[in-house]
Length: 98
Length: 461
Image 1: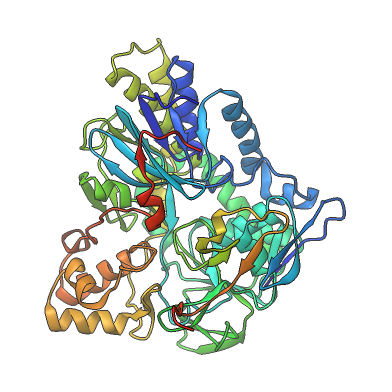
Image 2 (image 1 turned 180 degrees about the horizontal axis):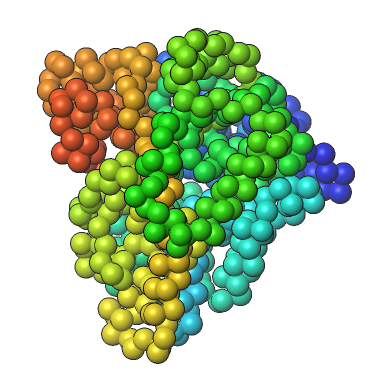
């Protein structure tokens, strides 16, 4: 959905989105990394289980919610990516029973 | 860091930083908290960060200025907590916050809200599809991550921000399939009564005219008077539909659709504190009422920046300084000679062009399509809100109770104004009379664990 402009000099590190290694750079928010990683979404909603991507990038829409290092429903546009971070896209309603 | 602060500032954008530095200059020590990881607000977001030269040039001198301001703020010695959300404010004042998953509270004598603004929600069919986002969001991605949207990119809406972003995107080698301009025709006629303001604010307006010339020269496909915009797709946006003034319906492939219909003040905290608000027809939003020093109708609660009415960064800085002087005076300090006139003169300069900008880009008032989602969180459409209104004849709070509209995690930030617009039209009442949701704490979602571990006066982690 988005792509990062080439910048050879910039250092990078790895984060894990749904277990897959993904390149992130200093200054990236988790939402920015999600937007450039296919399919560019953060979650499926708990209400209608429809796909959503980050919408406002400034903390007011709550559509960029994802699980970050085990913490659910984190506003990923307010959190900077850090090396080794584990990010999971949320998939609809949380099921308490297996 | 001590927990002794008489003054708490919420927000480290232009207004919050200017206020903090002014207070520090008077020998006072405020505490500044901010949701973002870095100071600068949205306008100067990530201005300290490294970026490719082309992106730095594209973001321009107004953005580059932010890095200097942020450095001054950091060097001012003001206590500053990034990544900190205020979720409740009690009169008196007790301020409840969360940081790194832990909640804490602080008491203080004066609070300055410098929480800025948000983009006005644009409820059109398909706006919840991945690939549809705000113009401001795309600009933030350019600032934080040198990131640009995949083609074909469509931009829809009105106001200065789409023009600024298109210019920046083209400058870094991006492409725009078309700008669907929804601004009502007759801008020159609307601006004419403000000719004197236009002359005083000519600096800003000439800058705007330069953008227009550049965009024309760049060959931007600019469609004016566009309406009935909708995003189509299943798992993500695949096409955009719109009608042109000749009545023709168009459908074009789209990978990204960026929306913008102006910005509105963040009013959740002032609503929760029962501050007085007035409806602004010019800006299509509620504006908290403040006195000449930025004090709201609640004693000791101050407001500065776009949260006190949309006016831009230079005005935000001036209002920040004025509010800082007001707070110092209110706490019994003497003001240095000349500080107030200088800040007021800066504010007058910064506000000069505003009436013209408001007249050129009026808030939208067309009908919201029945099938458009209004509440993104609870996934309720305009048709469902209208049906609830017809059935129950209630105001925003009744509609909220009947439908759950506004009860999701965003707490009405994305649906409040749309519900106000729908109900005003449905009942034939004014927007002012229709009102907004009753805002209750917590202002932002808080985890039960955070609440359970809350200790009053606990040190910030």
